[in-house]
Image (cartoon, rainbow, N blue to C red; front, side):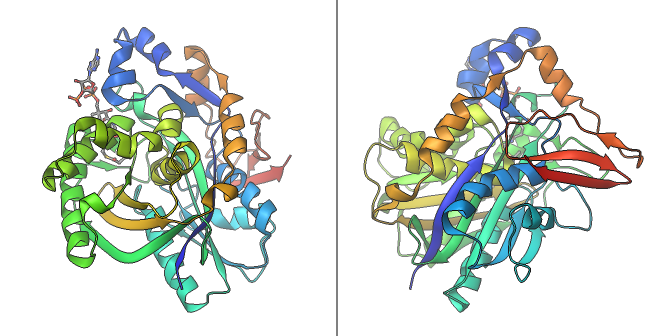
Length: 388
Ligand code: CAA
């Protein structure tokens, strides 16, 4: 029996800032962003959106297709937690009308926790193959204004159904892990924005890639040239290009730069215009590959490198299932991205600075999102959500 990803669907906000606008305001060359970091736009969450509403919006198409009966667990991966105690997934459980016997838990380890969720979900499904696990990764990437990280913000959520005999991607059991206590990127509880040692974080990312790959290589019978495509964690697209060149060199692949580019380019389309979505980014990259690659990927091996600052990294592999193309949500995703609204720099600042009430007073939140779920109110220290 194989276990893996049976459904995949993502959501991002309907507002974006073109990095050309940011570059103009900062008097920076646009090509630094478009080419140097490989990003063109970044999604900005509406005032009435958070990780809960984005998660529910990401999962809705999948629930509409498969129903809720077989889902026995919801794992919610995020590093944009809204509560120290209650899982954001419990709100999503209600918004999606999941069964009262469905367990819910939130997982955190920077951008890595969606991968931990998937591995745990695969283990649960292996024990009870008639059950399904809903894994949702949802994040809003925020850095200080005028910091080097500002151009690498974004937001998004991805929902995946983990099941036996999956229709999209079978996940292989062999993994390579690497953990090291480092301070490359972190967000203390009292801060809204992440702190980051940018250059150091890219070095640790590449070091972790080599370490996780080495561990994977010992466990798996697969070698670098057995993979047709690679999905990397995507803080910004250029990071994936650097990572892939590093891994190819490490393995003496003998592939030309263009061949290496071809192995990752289709994973980057969506992220280039959404920006960093932390836990969700690698899986939005997988969606991008499945939905945009012109060759049929059936039976192709995909290598995955998941990285969470701090840091925990994992390399694992999957095989694309024949017929996968019938079960994607391509049109929905592409329509959603095409319908987004560009914001001016001042409107971006308004979204960036939208009040985040913490005093328990009554706060009604204006309706702005085009998603099906919204945050309507924060009053008495309680967040209220509604379906539109
Ligand atoms: N035309 C073309 N390219 C240009 C250019 C121009 N006019 N001007 C500069 N560039 C290139 C630079 O040469 C550089 O390329 P290389 O990296 O290949 O040398 C690239 O653009 C970026 O320029 P800088 O190095 O000067 O950029 P910066 O220092 O201002 O910021 C960054 C880069 C440090 C990564 C910053 O974006 C940042 O701090 N980002 C947040 C942290 C991050 O994403 N880290 C990634 C690893 S950690 C992780 O993955 C977890 C996570 O999700 C955060």
